[in-house]
Length: 248
Length: 248
DNA sequence: TAACTTAGTGTAAAATTTACACTTCCAAAG
DNA sequence: CTTTGGAAGTGTAAATTTTACACTAAGTTA
Image 1: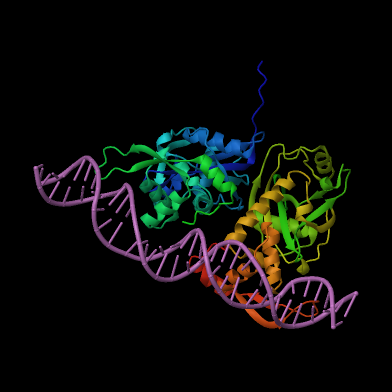
Image 2 (image 1 turned 90 degrees about the horizontal axis):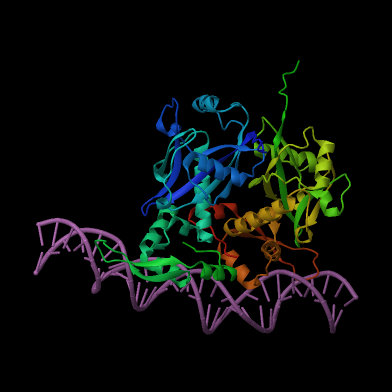
């Protein structure tokens, strides 16, 4: 008989994942859709999340749950924080839905939220488990979500904006090679403001963390742009010398 | 018969508080001492913290626990994050100690950490409950703590340093009136580096968030310094205009 | 009255930030 | 083949901010 540890769910603690993506136009977030009777579509949509196992650490739980619900595997996640209002599961439709999937549907649950930035083109979300779909949604168009997931999303977005100012996290949204125009659009989409092209270029190039490639864009109906790569080694040097403010 | 809700402890979720203070010299943190057989003193010291009640939100729980253990009341707390390694209660002395105070000592516990900044002179900590003492300790002199509290402290300190750069949180450590020298020492103590006096003064005064008072220091054995107050109204105006980087 | 301690002050050079407009290169349309 | 549309790419002058740096002033104590 195979010795297998019985995985016991902890009824009081869940994890939720805010996965951001970027399609060179807008900031997107990965949401699942659930079966059930919901007044409006927004209540059908939720962040991928579920209860943790007792033996599992929080980060692994978030990675497992994310994979179970959307198929996304080996995603680097960063904690946003804990959300634990006693009434965070107060919407009647959410309560009903929990009764349909949980052994202990009325337990007080606090959730730990994580976020990540991925290249949309690297992952094709596949709904599974209780998710009936898993798709990218434009962050600006989301007005509400199931449970307290809308406020979790807002807080993750705030944290992303903060981190974007002090670390090169945005490069995780970009493909290995990208143009300066694409990079600028990423900053603009996340920060929600437009930046001066010449000043943006001067500033980011001055840091010497972008390596220009020989290659240029192909088959675009305008002047082709040069491709760049993020130079992590140079960034690490810069960081060691105390740099922690991009100032965009 | 008085209708009283029975307060039921949640065996899986606790809160811990990192309370920072400043004595015009060093950054301090409020720690409790516990009864028990500990190899060394560091293992006897812990952040004030305990299990939450099921009906209670996380922030209120942190405030309640803080008051129960140290007497500090009505403290504004800010979340640091969740700490939930399955083995975070792995030290044998910690396990023993939990057996002496908890109904369910072997439960998996995740903890939500909060932090705050207070004026040491406003509060006289009073140990209570399972705390045998509650005192201020110099942050620089702490090398380890019970459970995973040392890493919680480090993370709270990191977060404090971040926030100090973008918001005037440091004024919470200062009395209502203070000198520029005291203010500078506060920044130096937290950031762990020395600042140029003239540049510091020019920079902070330029922001126009300090109101000079007529009053001067008394009975100091050197040239008496002018007192200032934090001008919150002006700061709010500054903030609304987009300011979010002190740049120290 | 001398010694000690912190308060308080100015400047010049360097670096950074800001605002701003035109030419280039490609594909697609006509 | 020519025109048009669209993003790429580039420089400068003015204003602001940052940096490095040393002495005098005003109290108390010895």
